[in-house]
Length: 295
Image (tube, rainbow, N blue to C red):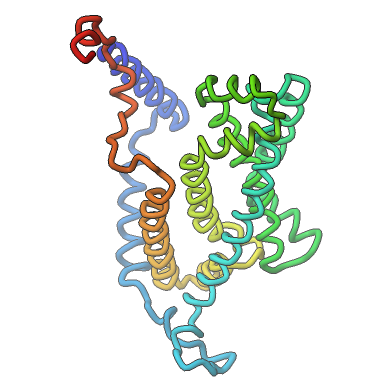
């Protein structure tokens, strides 16, 4: 089993290299030249980072006691966090309404298939395209960013959630149906509590994703720190761009640490060591003698 697993991984890696060679037209020398250009660009244009982005702006005048709160880095990052937070919560709630309808073990095919198509349609457009659409419809500003990432979050989380619901054990669902519970009661009383740890992990992951992607939608005028990054890039101030990117990196690391502690409050068996995916694949069947000895 282990040999077949690693053989399949090796075969996929080989196929990826062949496809990459086709995309590069066989000219592997371009990679070496590209790395040299990147090194020159980084050392001459980006390094060291310009931390003046964390100093108070000259305009508008700063009236706060902490001048740091008037800096481009703080204002842009705070706006990005607000956009990501609102869009993640709204998208999560929207996905929670649709994902139980898309799960095949909770609904009939006539209901689950149309809802899956709806989620796929919403997910097929990246948040950047949604941002362009809403900038055209309602204009520049963070509201366009919130709506763009909310729509994408609904489609993305909706898929993760209904796949999580479909992967749960059927015994609790059958017990609920035997008790005469409705689909709504089964979802709220059985499905969601059973998968709460997964749902929380997906929620925090989506918030982290929206924080990172907020740097992209700002380029099209949807607000956030990406707007300032785009302005610095236009004026070739790449050292300030690097400082803002490092700030984003630090914030993402903090969010990841928070998610680690947040999941521990949901997991009732935090002291139980969970099996890894490799252990599950290579799991040996329990011998009858072992079962008798355990009894």
